[in-house]
Image: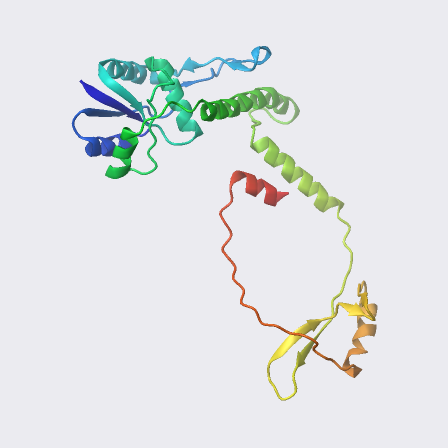
Length: 265
């Protein structure tokens, strides 16, 4: 009798088996085993958006092997990836294998090293239903958006197009931004500056014109700029204050889906 550990990747399964040694069998689910049906809507909208899951046909043999292995195991550990999708796969595995989701059956491996794998096995937890529900809600939204909007695209634009939870919003953002660009009315403006340096020193710096007689300057034509420019050589310039400060700038963090959308706006 052995303990059974189920991961997603067959390559990962081989490595973990080496770390755990005798007393453990490690196998892979190869991703999702259940999903909403492709041929029907699969969501009871009028019953609290209740999903109808089915076993994937191309995973029938694998499901049969997993059930057989689980029936012979002393303990089954669900070691799918530590994210929403992984939590959902573990939840569906529990349904298929008759495992109580409230028992300590779920383990997380954030790195595949001997220490991390053994720590995970020694610290199992129940399945996080909140994380699973987050994945389930996303999957249901995908189905509702895709099945409701895609036929509209086929009718209005071209058959074969698809609408999704992410791409539909992204297209809307791009369309709104393009409209802003098309509606933009350009306005001419000019800036003026002088290069200054202290007497007897070579260091120069650029001073940009900001105010004239205490009022903010807005220059909208070449004629206005030239009129002010003609006055500049006859003026005296005084630096009233200066400071030198170190400045540190960090590299920008990589985009996430949400920050990419925010930047696009």
